[in-house]
Length: 287
Image (cartoon, rainbow, N blue to C red; front, side, top):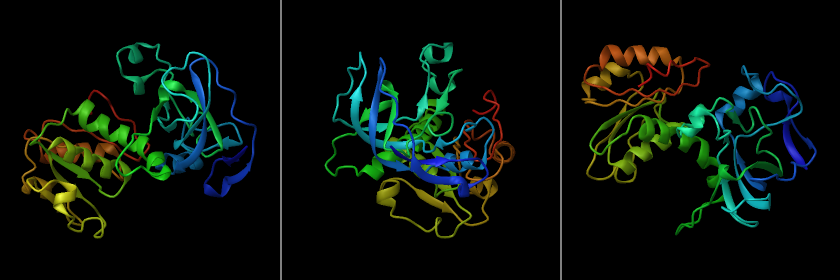
């Protein structure tokens, strides 16, 4: 099959399209997907640069996000059938460890990601566990393959931040730090869905331009943009209230946490962080 592979770490110059062996036939509980679209995630850039714990055997098929058609299924697969249109959850858990049994699959002691630790989605075929796919929903306006491919990883991340961890409720205020990326845009839409008020920040004037409030935040709620150069201090003056959820587009998560604790507490009682830096979060402090 054809695939986009990384031949070594050190940057995008080491990517190439080439022939590789077909994805293995599905075993019990697995299925093989004929990929129709794969989406670029910032994780792919980190993997290409050589992030710790990433790809160490080459050629390595890249790509975490994808969508496609079920090509074949292994024994005991009941949830989908050959021919189904599906989107992928790239986080592979073993479903046996103590965290998985508690429902915290992303904390699995054997957690792996397509495109980082395992062969990814930028190939004609990929084989994954059946519980890592979901049928593409039937909507009035059908999702394109590209939209379905780009949905999973950013949405799962934003949903976990705002719903699972922060338990966001209608009427609360969300500060989204660094609007414009996949997680932050998805977080804004989830906040709208839940009836929360949103404030966004951006270092890019284009990203901070006023938007259609009916589309982004609902006509009965406030959608504000904190302009270029605005930090947590200005957002406090804008009446952040009792809740803060931050998606740090750039910079160490510790810097954001320090600023929020200094400027927003005790009024803001919940802080959720996602950073693109290779900094390790102390889960006990990231609340």
